[in-house]
Image (tube, rainbow, N blue to C red):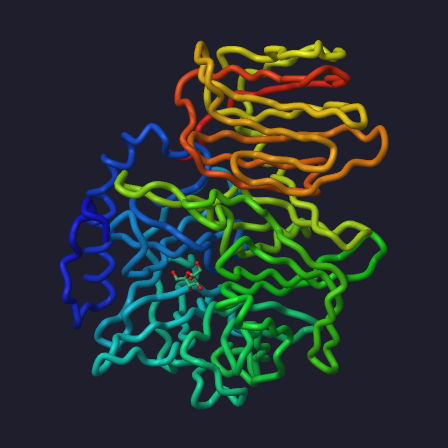
Length: 496
Ligand code: FRU
């Protein structure tokens, strides 16, 4: 807990659902006024009413709503006392906060409710499956178990499953995982239901595959390890997501996302249902955003939603905000994830984001002079900007955002033909001959997202930004930079 966090009224070894949730929600309500006064708090990125959030959990579309559950500490703005917060939305932009869904049942020996997924049983009951972290016994942490909770028809009130654990290391039928064995993620294929989990076995950090043996989703059979990484390289592959995306050729690309205590890794390849094996064709980093000495990944712990129109929506936690402001953590803008013919991912914000657009400012196409050109002044600080620039071979440019009437830039994006940088993150990025550079970025107080050339790269950044008016300028750094277009939109707040 940080010094500023209210102390939870522990110990609560006999808490039942209602008292645990009432107490937790009161603690969140008490922190709301403080969180609301922080000028750096994002205005259109989703966050809890107050206090801490990390991973998006149990993300699913059901009965006309997108449901978002999330790792939540109701008792402070740092990690701890893991509960599941809950919100729902019709458009993934405007969210309605709902009561806390899951709480640690101390009377059942539960210390934390870790990450997991949502599904619907064969009889139509909403189900959440998550990792239970037990209370230490005799100073020893029990191994993780996978537990479930059953919901009412509106997905609002949850009860722990009578058959918990639904999956444990004593009976799972697979190899001897060590104690960390967590973050179940459900997917469906060929009318069958599967679940993946991340865990450590022998010298590897592995992704294990299980299959539901009946429609209750409370009985699982071990199938195989579909992916393994040397533990010298990855401490634990957290939050695995494994799913198929239909490609333009009418086939399927299988995607594995893992959060390995650094930026999220992707692998794209083929899944063989007969042998339960995954063969990767391409791999890389999904969103390289990081700030050394603050966090090694600003975008982390992904999850997905299958939207009713067929889109695969990628969700991720933005992390690396300072403590002590009554809130910490938010959800990145939901992204449409597609796989290109090169079997590389493309990430683009959902079109629904455009509802936030307000006043629009454009700047005329032109060959930029060799020094700096101011392309927008006195913009409200919450903005979306799209610009295309043609940069002659061997030349470079820098785009700066600064508080109006302030000479020091708050944000710099630079490109030199091979390297693209924002903040302290630099990635290799090359363009075809004559291909313009497209920058699309969102500034929402201290949360910033950059998308490059139709989502071929995405970078998330956390850093303090001006909170009133900003100017944008482009430095052609000697010339040979053509501005093809520049549009900025002031964005309205969506939920605060
Ligand atoms: C990832 C993670 C998960 C875990 C959860 C706990 O950020 O460490 O592996 O379930 O957060 O809050």
